[in-house]
Length: 292
Image (cartoon, rainbow, N blue to C red):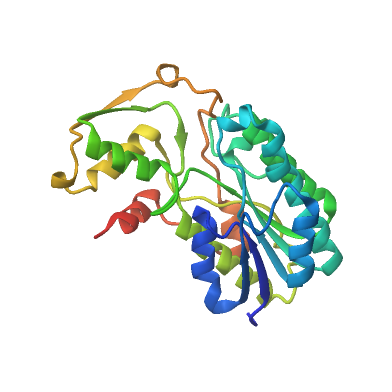
């Protein structure tokens, strides 16, 4: 892949930070985040695209506060729903590829087998609805695009479930964690590295060709939040944690403003088929994050 010029929105987020690390050696990388760009202002987005003249635009920025989206829905829609559409229109004008990250929350979690890309979205809350609106805006703009749906993203920086569990395990003797929500914990570094490999594969064809559209991108395997918490704390040195018990509870015992999908497992067979990429089991990735 000949060093393309890439414009990355969301450079300080979990995925964005890892993308900076992964893409820097293989591209001419322009990175931006708030306040230098304001995703609620179309002119701010357009100016960065116009000034950067990128061949690839990557949008790793999002309003990710799931519960807060229920009350700040207008702001969430501007960032998650409208901003990606503006990026897509600009990408279309320049013949650029747009890479965008979506979410398992576009589904209602009522399915009993892994979701495939063709399954009908039915978001349960404002966060999922605004993210779905962004996906649809990109598709309607008609630019070359890769939309990667992610699941249960975590990493060594930012705000995420893994870091929260580590902190709580150091503070409390007992934790209570939901066991009736199932998903695929996915390391932010794996997302970035898979994105880079997908871009190399697309570039090697000389065009995006059939390798565009919506793809599920998450770890292999599945677990509950309780199972994930147990694995995280189990990898912590005993002298580094106070927690001795992790109680499994139901979602009804831990009510939140937004109803979460009870089943968020997604099939990544399309990603494997089109790009030859398959992420390792979530336990393997977690071990790499927490190894000393």
